[in-house]
Length: 352
Image (cartoon, rainbow, N blue to C red; front, side):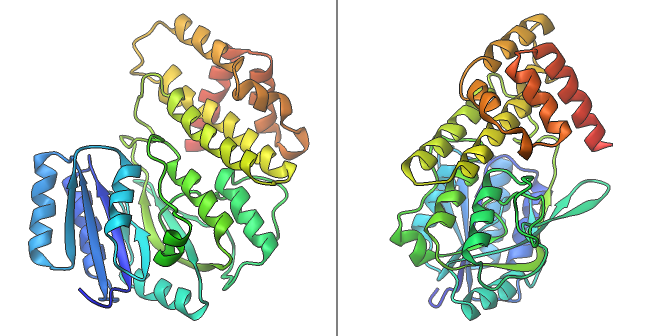
C-alpha cells in the first residue's frame, strides 16, 4: 500500500483471543485509513494464529510477520524493519485504542513537525479506569526543561523537581507514542534484545535524548489493560535478573552521556523500585515453592549487592516521601524480612 501515514506494530504471543480481537478491531476501524497493521506473530499458539489469519483475510492492510518466539523487543524490531509508514506506533495485543486515535495524533505530529508525539492513556482495571499521562495539558513542542522532565519521568514518575505542568506518572511505555520513522532510522534506534522487562524504558530514554521536537497531546486514546496474569504480575523464578538487565542498560546510557546528578538519583530510585517489584514477582510470590526462610535469605543477600546496595546508599532523602524512605532504610540495613512485610502491606494498601 502506498502513502502509508502510520505503521501500527502489534507484537503477539500469549494473549486471550477476545483481547486480541478487540485490539485488532480498534486498529482496523480507525478514522485514519492510510495505515498498515504489522502483526508480529512471535511464536503464538495455534488458537492465536487462527485469530490473526482471520483478521488478515478481512483487510489487506494487515501484514502478518511470523517468527520463532524471541520476546517483545525482537518482535517490535521485526515490525520496525518492515514498516513503511511515515510514522510508527505500537499497540500491545491485549490493549485497544480509540477510533480517532491515529487521525488526531497524525495531525498533531504533522502540524508541529514532531519527531515524537506522546498522548494520554487510560489504565483499565476490572472495576475502574485511571488517567495516566506525563503532563496536565497539551504542549505542541516541549521546551528543553520539559524534555528533561520527560526523560526523568521515563525512569521514575514521582520526583519532586518537575515543572508545574508535570504529573506523577512515568512515561516509559512504548505505547501511546508516535515516532517519525526517518528519525528512528537516522539514529538507528531499535529495541534492546535480551532485556525482557522495561525494554521500552531503555528504548524511550534514548529516543527522547536524540529528539529535538517532542510534543504532548492531552487526550486519552490508549486503553491499557491491567491484567493479573500479564508479565508484570506473573511469577518468574529468579525474576530479579530481568530487572538487573534493564538497569545495566540505563546505567550504560547515563555513563555514556553528560547527565546531571538528578538523572542518577532517578536511576537509583528505579533500582529500589525494581528490587521492591521483585518481592511481588519472585521472593514473596504465592507460587514461589521455596521455604519462606530461604526466600528471605536470598532477598537479604540481594540487598547487599549492587546496583541495589549502591542505590540505597546514594539516594538523597530530599527526593523521597516517607513511604519511600522506609524501604530505602530497610535495604540499606539489609532488613529483608521487614522489607518484605512492609512492601506486601504497602502494595495491598495501594490496591484497596
